[in-house]
Image (cartoon, rainbow, N blue to C red; front, side, top):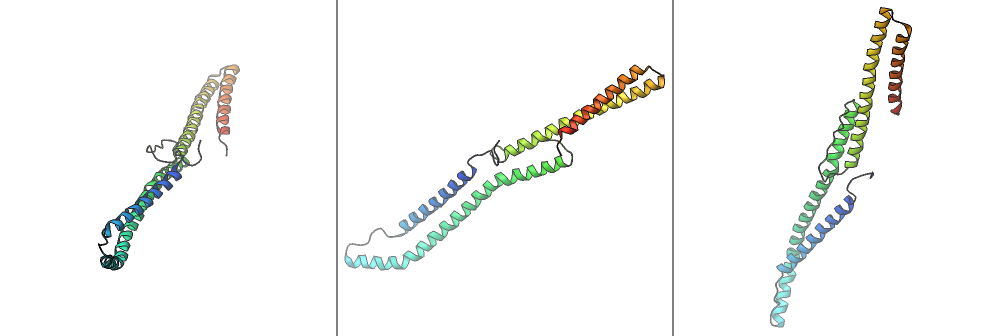
Length: 191
């Protein structure tokens, strides 16, 4: 059983998706700056100098605007990506805590179900198995108690009728056997 998540490359995948978004945003910003600049510098020396003067004035403003838009795009996309990935842990952790609280109150349902790509599924399976084991133990103890109750009534009835000692002793041995069964069920629960 894995210790944190059923998805082995969770952090690596998140890192590479974040890196991909940043690289994509930087490439879009570079393409925007490239497309915003004039392509033709001019035919003569004077035309080239004139184009360079225009570039000096326009380049800073256009570059800042393009990079600001791309920075907002990158930051927004990264925030959404991390929010999406955090919900893959936060939702399951909330459901695990709620089910653990129910188990602590004696409600041994053990019915935690996650979405297909959620994390922490191994923890849900372990909690479901624990709830099922304790539910089985409680059922076994209840069954033994019902047998004890029936046998005690039988002993009382035998004594009232004045039955022989062997019949009473057998009924008491049955009660003792069921008490030992309950004791073994309780002993399995480590405190």
